[in-house]
Length: 121
Image 1 (cartoon, one colour):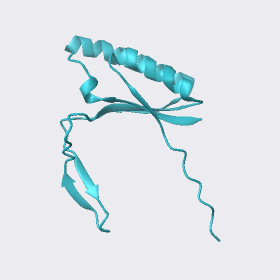
Image 2 (cartoon, rainbow, N blue to C red):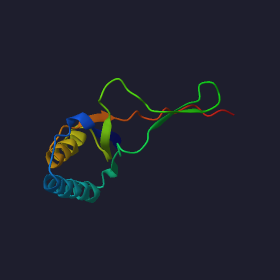
Image 3 (cartoon, rainbow, N blue to C red):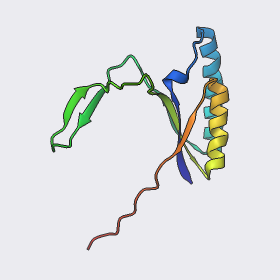
Image 4 (cartoon, rainbow, N blue to C red):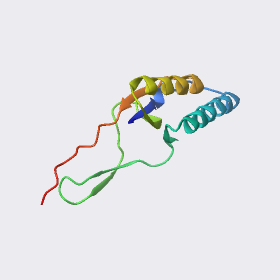
């Protein structure tokens, strides 16, 4: 099985009413239930854009925390789902179901296969 990230850019989310958001939430919950029943669901979540964001840089050897990131673009991750599926075709299937349920585009990315380092004696 291979893990895929299915995510959306917050800029892709159209304006919606509270009632419209309730309907999208019900549809999204139904897709999550389908993914759980199929045994492919790992995790799903939306990011809180009202919460503070910070960065940490340890390139000097000591963690340095700063406010931000303050990106030049308005584009930023709005939410995501992680699935563990057999192949790209299955990832596309679930991403399509999520896109229909949410009503906005989704991006699909495969996680890297963990590097297997040789054991040292």
